[in-house]
Length: 205
Image 1: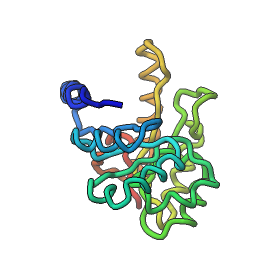
Image 2: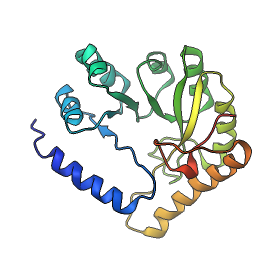
Image 3: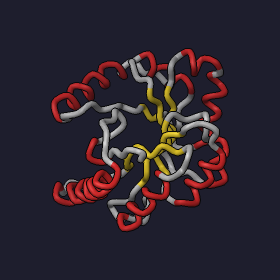
């Protein structure tokens, strides 16, 4: 597949972000369903952060790229739902895991990690059954548990607003995220992060 239009489209996205976002935003190029040519095209366009939904597909691309992955300076993100039985291959392969949604998964990642592993807590703020993530009510307690692990570095929340044109509904999801982040900051403080909204970026105590 050709990716000639990627630089132009990326420039448009960056211009829109610059217009709307008051803080730095990291663009993650999601290459699910594409081969390593898409990864290389994204890197050539200036995107170093590559997101994958499935562990197996990500590992295959990493192995196909071999040393090229490191030479290209790729930062791999795991953005899809992660099953506990796949957690063993995650540490050491991903810069950031976006989808920690249970203490069981967090415990397995902690058990497998030999070095610090950056993670986000996935919260289903939309309360939609087809989406993964812990409940809003369970989020703060789970955040406390994850932050207590030795190797996991809890850096914020991963949330998705409901897919709707209703602005009020969209904002309700954002308000839920900010409420969790605000309560967490009161406990442990916060710090700026290029990975997400400062309102939902957490600091390890």
